[in-house]
Length: 475
Image (cartoon, rainbow, N blue to C red; front, side, top):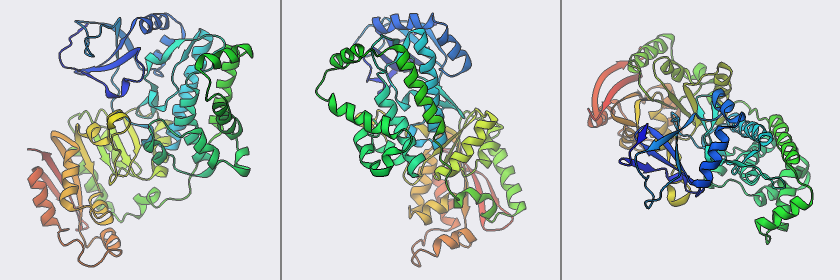
């Protein structure tokens, strides 16, 4: 299939390896390779291990294509172009739960363990080299594979530690949520930061002596040495492919042992404590079922909690992104989806009052949540508005604008308004000064909805304090 240059845009996050670059052309994801990378690709495609990884779904499906002309980037002529499968929704590591990050790390190591005996390694060890098909991790950076040279260490080891291993150590050993730390730095957590955190008796915790303190000491020792010098020293010391493989196996063993099971969470038991009657729940489920009918490509479930409505949406939609603030709740949902091998629901950790911003170089290397999510065919915002408007003091017009903005033009917004008299709203208002939210009432909410689209359906739940709306955004 020939790919035309017209309508091709560069992927902002793919500039770090000059040997290859990722582009988007319509619905296609393309990777352009220079001469060296093209030769590596041909060897990779002709190996036994790589086609097997693709066939199993561990590596994204990839095939060579013929471009109709040079792809953009200063008129540079590339030696070869590959086409990858399109991942349904791009998610960043600081939006994953603990178990998701651990499974991504294990997949990265499994791939490296398969590549080394076949004469290949990976240039990178970054968590950003992995994405998700629902609950299944998938390795996407095909351009990272390169022939291995004896006497050279794994070039991706530092990235692996900073973006995968260190976050796991922090949460498994200390109970610290890693997401804010990964979000703060696109390159991850530095060894020096870890060394300060894991001092005293903590320095003896599993994985810390070797991968934190020894790693940091080696970096300080070789801070003035060139990469060539370090490689020469390792070759002279007898570093071999077998030792590299043993290191990978050791990392796999360590990562498998790391675990984090958080204590009780208010949101983990929300379905029992939220106060819905059986009639409320049945009416709400029927309303949502009708709203997600018609085979939508992408559904966002905002404030998904344990995934009850995400599962319902997945019966009709091709893909559902379930966003929940509580990492413990997301981790439980992910573990359940993983057991079921569910590939249509992607659970993510995110505070919707502080969604993921753009990050990295010029703020666009890692796209923020809003530009990634603004193409949803259906957006579910169930039992969410009062938490933003009352719990987080976000003005009601801002809440409505934000929710509507996460829909594609003509998409459907399914939103629930909780009356101030509802027990949950009363609980939130009890901690606020009297009269702080004079505009928080159903008539004003309906007026704001009408300004953002056409209200197709409206249903007051039997309890009388909650109302559901289906709105065609921009309609």
